[in-house]
Length: 180
Image 1: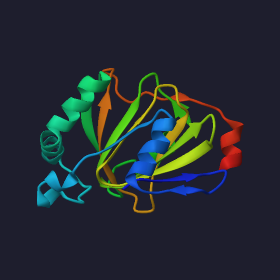
Image 2: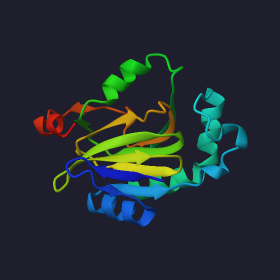
Image 3: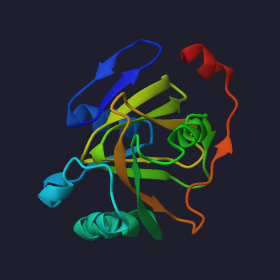
Image 4: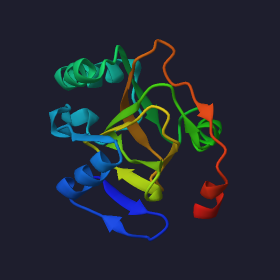
């Protein structure tokens, strides 16, 4: 289950209803998917073959299509990151820069964990710690970035509007440097 930490105050928000309410106030979609639907052999596994990724997409097909219809997403895939991922450090350097997108950034965590750091006009930067079953959609043009937890592994379904997929636009923010 997701937890939120507001960087300026170190306030922590827990509980599905409280997390959902806070994120909704920030314009961020938050939902839950039941990862127990995954075959036992894929539960908690982050080193996925292409066939495994197709299985993940198949298992969550109804959830993906429901979200896609509600939010106008047209493309989706699965990303799997762990210590065996070639170029992991370079990928993380790319992900860990504050940026925006011209479409929502959507992730449904199916294994492992990750953190979205999101900028709010009211609250400054806050961390959303995500675990299996958490689904988040960071709104278009919202400054943010993604990183791994100390676990350093995650599997996520990604949904996109555009065929190009993940395209970041750098966002220079001195306030972020102060909030680290």
